[in-house]
Image (tube, rainbow, N blue to C red; front, side, top):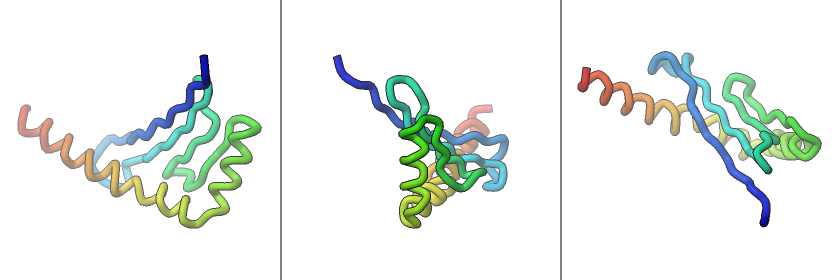
Length: 91
């Protein structure tokens, strides 16, 4: 018995070009997505009453937004470059 809370970070892309990459951070509670940050939107969006409050809180903090916005290049671009090179050398 307890609560299930987890975070998913993912990168959606169709090339290694930074403009073609979307970074998505999703926070789930009891299998329901409550809040999401998308690099295409540039801010957090809440999907539940609590998620809306959390999104407002995080959107009002410039540091939190800067960290999430930076993940597109730091997390996605870095790993996509590695994955593309690995795939190209095997094909």
